Image (cartoon, rainbow over all chains, first blue to last red; front, top):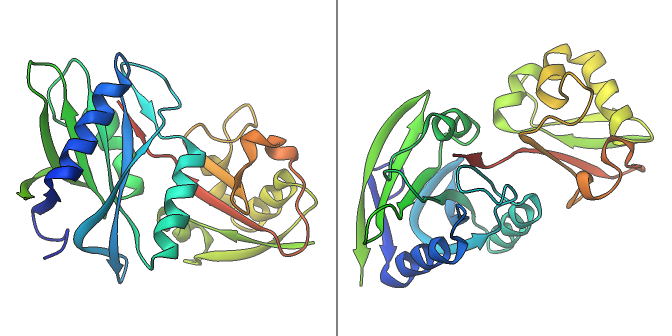
Length: 145
Length: 91
């Protein structure tokens, strides 16, 4: 089952790693990349790595994933015969739903899954989306324990 | 000197659909000028009004972001690969 389906499968460890990186980034937004198999330019199968990255913006309102971390993640994935299949970032004071800026920027990587972790409330809320042509569709997130 | 320029999917329609194109120049800026001369549609995508690399574009000489080198003045030599990767960004 690939990302073309509306389901994102994560291990508990991957889920915890993403949420932990988001807390580590406070008070700013945090971000990272997801790697996995890519066949015919389309992500397939499970996420193989969640890779924390730096937020160049160092902002509580925006993120720009560090360009050096981006290239390092891409090369590491390629070395394994894989590719980048998505990214995640935190919303420190808003819902786990793509902002207008998120939707605009997603045009560059329409095949990716976009994970957003909201830290607004007491417990973190992690949701995943596909964003294509300005349209947002939520993915089911399944934790494999 | 010819270098290979790799384009992201969304910019390829501006370059006749090519994933990578050959371009010449002594610097990244020269290479961009050569590209834009042949593919004018790329102009607004690579540099902003002030002539700097567009805010939401990462440009690499081989695997090094040219912002940490000499920006558009970064020198390129025969066989280098210039990769254009849109930034992963949002709010």
